[in-house]
Image (cartoon, rainbow, N blue to C red; front, side):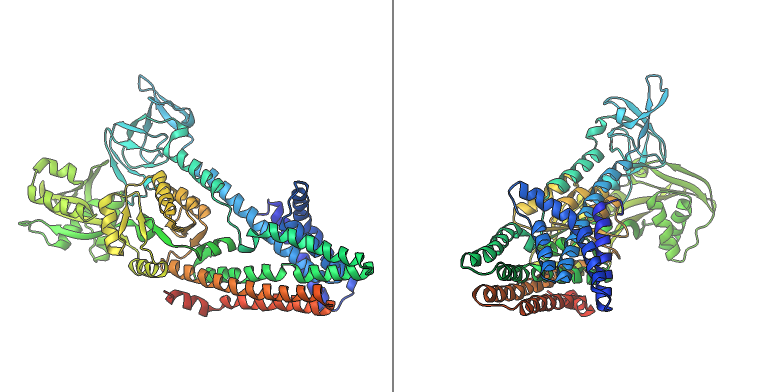
Length: 631
């Protein structure tokens, strides 16, 4: 953060402003606090001033130059505090924008770390050579050892393994890979060795396309601004022209230069947008602070304003609506088998105790939660992509995929049970004891507590049903959507497909808030109107790309923060009306009558205080409680 000059200058300006305010309140010599305020002007105002002069050279006026001129005008008539406050507001805004830009750029560069820099290339005689992954050519063969990240997109030529490809597809469980299956660069190989033929050059891998999509979305996403900034050009031109007219016209009628200058400076003070800026920022900043205390980090006031306009909410599945890891959901003992449910689970857990596979760990954890202590196992072996076997208390226990065990028996009843489980979105694991089929274990990712209530709340709040966008398979997605109360499901999506889905929703007029957690969600998070990441399970790229982060992984905070943002927006509108009324009355008084400078300053400061205090109402905990119940 401190590497950015905007942050350093904004910090210096804020410190000097605070020091000047303390000295002024303490009654020190005027030269001291005036000097501190002037130093604040220099620290925070030189960069906007230079930017404004460059814009002026291109025959445009922007709010940066206007604020600097207004600040100087305030100091010219003795209101140096007002000018310094304005400088601090704009310097801080510029620093936050620069920081957000840098974090996005860093996160995109950091994504490349997912893909290994080197890979083991195999020659014609199977001779191994470690080369740069970027130098791999289509058609070459690489060796991927257990635990390594795959160095290129390709097709499995030999070997079998379970590959964790959550970074690409978002699937909660590793996917078994056999000869002929496709694998992706950057995904994590399991316990088996794979020989892979490269099918895409490094610049065209899925992970490389994710990098490109995030960068492109960040660069082309419309630069959104706060309401007052959208009219800054016209307001700047009108205010500068009006100030010059207020100064020059009376001179034509014989008014003294000093009197005309005083009237013009008074006009600039009462017409300056201090109250308008504060009308916008305090409600949004107060809402950000309140949301932060309750587990939602909103990265900027612009994001809070965007949240108020969300009309459609889209969810990722794994790690967002679900906990992101498999859990045992059922134990099915086959007819005629002399084992209880607990006994079958205990035998399976004993065999899986030494396994590193996530499904095996889920079986062991379920046994522990049921109070079953796995017996010691001997002669443990693991077949990558298939399953495990071990001797447990004199019994040969095999726990494996249906494709591996059912191929030996062809039992129709078991096949139907497995098909029913898979149709319901479960992963089926078959248990065989002493060569005979004993039962089937069902595993599935578990929906987060409160997910269904959150979906219902969002539907009532936005008037539109949420959408599920996932890279997981259609059956698992449909099962979860039914549990959560989501009607529209788009499954089997790669990262580019998620971006296309977001664009399709936007094309129908939706302002989309996407909630996700993985690397594969990052391009869509960047493309959405508002991207929201899960804080505890989210990847670094998702956290940096998202506009807001749910720090406690509580989905119920999503509708609450949207409702809070809408209330903040209503306060902004009310404040703008108050500020505009004060400005209109004071400007009319100055132009049509004789507005005393003290009255003008009092009116200007009074309006600033009123809108500021009105916005700060959202700092109260009652504002969050009200947001959690708003429909």
